[in-house]
Length: 105
Image (tube, rainbow, N blue to C red; front, top):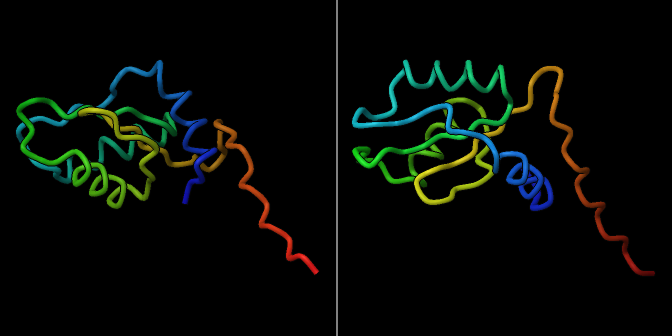
């Protein structure tokens, strides 16, 4: 699970990206999942765009793809969303998660 700080970092990195994957009339199929998996292996962070002809909801489709590809949704903005999955040797270094609060004694 990504923290807010990590999502903000990924959003900043993803701002300049062009959409690598576009989803059109067809629903999410095995071929699309394979294409997204290949893109995530190569890039770690990808931008996916839902075309106007796509009948799927943006939240529903982003969650379905993230679940199928073992990735996490970093941002949903309009009809575009960012998917993140760390590589075996990560290129993107995420900020550390916040330390848990200490108990006052």
